[in-house]
Image (cartoon, rainbow over all chains, first blue to last red; front, side, top):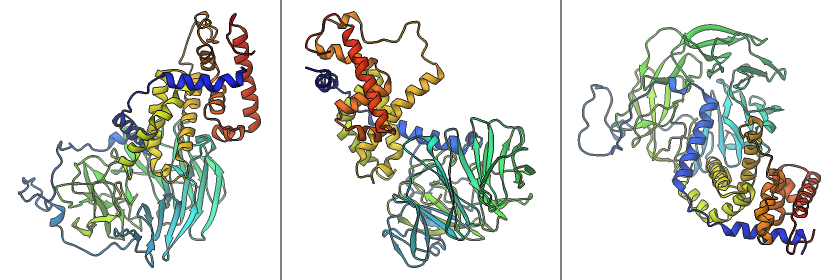
Length: 386
Length: 169
């Protein structure tokens, strides 16, 4: 018998000799969640722990219970989500729960998945790839899997950029970018994500990539096609971009917190001022307001200056499952799980929701109302808006 | 993740098959368990995408192969495994007196990772050279040369054994 003939039998016997242990599903699932969280955290921030920690309540409360809730001293907050007034449906695209996408022209037949909405632009991410949702149509931009966090949209909604995921590994990835004003793809360049992630893209079409291995931030200018290293960064190793603005970004600085700045055409970071907000900050369409998490509360305040912030008056029972998305110049939408216990959003990156409500909160006074009640989102167990 | 229950059902249904493959690829029970854990954690992360695939098993197998090769590559690059002894070439005298498959299996285990992967995919998974090339992300020519090297290594191992029963050299 030849070696060729022997090998199949040898391998089969070797495989059969060992009785597989019973699968430890909880270990696999826990490990998978940790892996996802590590990947996400590494990509979004090495300093997520800087977010204020809210003491978690170690019980799951019933948001619809009839008994009264102990007073907390916050008289403006209702106890339960069902106590909120009901408002209009969202002004931005949404899933009402009937396997359609609405709010962007005629309804589109599609199961709910992930929306990314900035300015007037909405990306819709589903199993088919990255799509643009507009005019009652889904337009597939690219079918390849994305990696390195979710695709980035500039604040004005013009530019979109993300990195593909390839079976060949992170060194074979591609940076894809689209000018959504013209609908044209403007970049498809080799891009390694082995030790970094795409932090975002500004309104000038400049993609910021922070590389942990080299301890540097690169800027890829979609208009010129050139990639340059950003200089003048504040001290912190590795660099940790917290958010991207219309013309630059905010980055962590040792001893100072987060410094917001602009970036010159030649890639120089020009420090402007210190800000309170961290990762997860979302800006209003004109950039004048920011929503973010502070001391365990979601707040809205001016993106610059020292004017006081306004806490969002969310129900006491439950918690938001993700950062707010701006619906318009004065309102944000909050995905709220009435069954969840409070936890810092920056660390609950893959938090599993159990039936969220979509709440609208007003920047002027923080008051909230129901935009969509439980059942919206077609059973999505994670955040719909990113 | 949209459906945890679906993921768990998939793992349970495919557990034995994947575990056997992991054992052959990794070469030991302990390493196989590690490889299974890493692979299925990655499968968990990618589950929403995997459920849409026509052949999820093939994708999982690719994840397993990538995990195997990248893990070995990392270990080699970081030089974490220091040993005073030369690599085992599968010619331990204690194995010379056992049956053929028990003789051959340690030699397969002693092959470099890529060579072992090619042998397992070819002779256990019964994949063609073209399919193996797709799984490993390399050319058919590379598969041919890797398989050639692996078979030569196995034949050298067999030749080094004084007594072999039934294996043509």
